[in-house]
Image 1 (cartoon, rainbow, N blue to C red):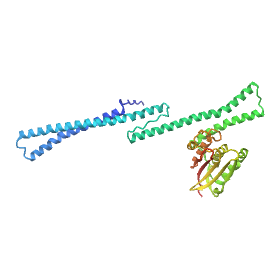
Image 2 (cartoon, helix red, strand yellow; image 1 turned 180 degrees about the vertical axis):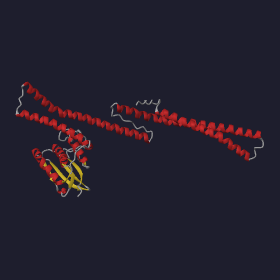
Image 3 (cartoon, helix red, strand yellow; image 1 turned 30 degrees about the vertical axis):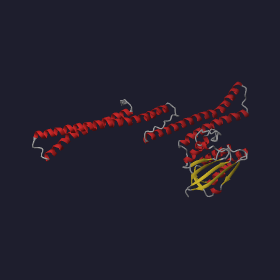
Image 4 (cartoon, one colour; image 1 turned 30 degrees about the horizontal axis):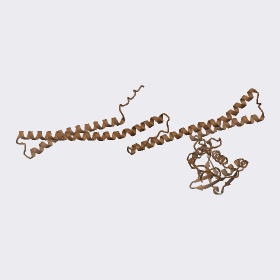
Length: 374
């Protein structure tokens, strides 16, 4: 079924508002004049009859004509003056509307062209237009942030892919030309690089799955102390190899239980511990602890390493976000691990926060999970 396209109205919004106001004023003036012309003479005639002016028909007619002419003249002049004044006021306010509306329209066109840094200045034309401009600027800022994140993501992906692909291409060419042989060493290198690509692909898929809320959770009630010691046993060799102390403070976890997907929570803790290990120098300490809070269990991974600048804290969990010190790196080194961790905690109806007093002051990541119902 075909539909006819709506033809756009000619003229700007302020022009149409002005014309509409003038039409309303004209309709009001005509209505007021008609009512005055119909009702006024009848009421005046009735009053003349009550005071005994109906004996002389010629005099009565003259008086009524005088009243009618005076009424029409005064009402007409009054309505004309009112119409002119109202039109002037309407024109003044529509003129004030024109500039901010043009600014909003121009800003929208620039954003539509991909210029997300466009902002609308303070229009100063009333609360509603001010709120519209503020909402537009917030939208443009969010779009600019998303675009910057997308660019960083593409740059980081290119960086992560470049090394393994270059290694694979070099070995492929070497094997093809007979320069290299498929030895045990080359097999190890090829397996390492292909594994790196596989992990990157898996992590990207994990990010998409987590952020879309499609994580398959298999919930069970577990003791928080068991989670802490399991992660200690899983990661202590890597910590010992770097010379970083891994401490478990399970005193606050006594009797504390949560209903979670054990595998997913282990993944989240592994990401936090890998992040802490990356940014803690040899001789430093990373502590895993847990405390009971109101209706929840708070598990904290704290280190005394590099720390996080205050300006990076609000964005530390953004995917592919890279701070000046690359603090946001996760397992793949491209900022995916912390994003996955946040999505896992969100899927468990919990939340995660990051705290740091600044560079060189260490950092603490705290995941808060609802306690199991006894």
